Image (cartoon, rainbow, N blue to C red):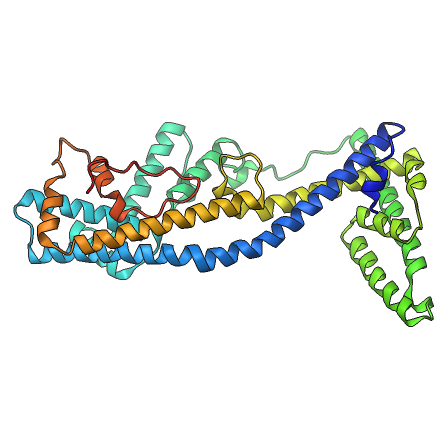
Length: 385
């Protein structure tokens, strides 16, 4: 029986006891949650490495093969007329832009330069310069101190931070001298330090009582010594990590304390315990937040989600990725035929009737990267064959 379950059967006598029981329960819940997510992390990475990423890689290779095929068609001149070649070149550059945005590829970069008359790096640098200029004019935020990035998302994130005041515009904005503390502030800090020492002493007392009762060197029976050695290891680990709940559970386990003892703790002791538990709860919540961060993109629409939710989303994403892969393979095979390519290009309206992004929608099934969970995907063209 744990401290949480035992105390849960007793009605708290006052607000301090109520807070104590609530904090114990919350710490226990967060610790269980952390254990569940840590265990699921192993399964997640196994599925990611064996089921999803290989499909993504094969899908990218399929799209890469389509890009090389379209270049070959342009080289040998299978299309009739300048308008068709222009359409195909625009679609090829859009595909190359998407592929190079996923990662460097020297062959594709050379292909991009060949068909755009400008290097991919130069075009991206020009886009970033334009984005910085736009941010400065629209938001009124100087961006000169963030030159050199080639990532638009990083640039936008930096701009948001600067607008919120999280990043100073210049190093000189930070005062060099701290303001002199008032006597009232100094007294409050001393009081806080004194309280922290008292709290530390309170937890140390629990540790010393356990260490005195469980010291294995004082045990003559080999089996009992082995058990106490294991328990003492748990005591040391709990003390080092500031895990008050684990220490109390160990006291409960060896019958050093009971429910009546915990229900009759003094107000001073409860105040100290509650502060330790609040700190422990905050640390556990931060750990849970960190361990769940890699899974959030799977469940963005959910405020709270479980490992089971993520696993279901993973299964759905694997099915979608496999469907996309089958489609790209079919597209690659179909576009091998020059007649099929000419028929397909002929179905695409010419500018200015059709904007480039609308033209790209028609081509998306063949060239778009797999839809990632939590991100909207472009609508598939209904006229696609």
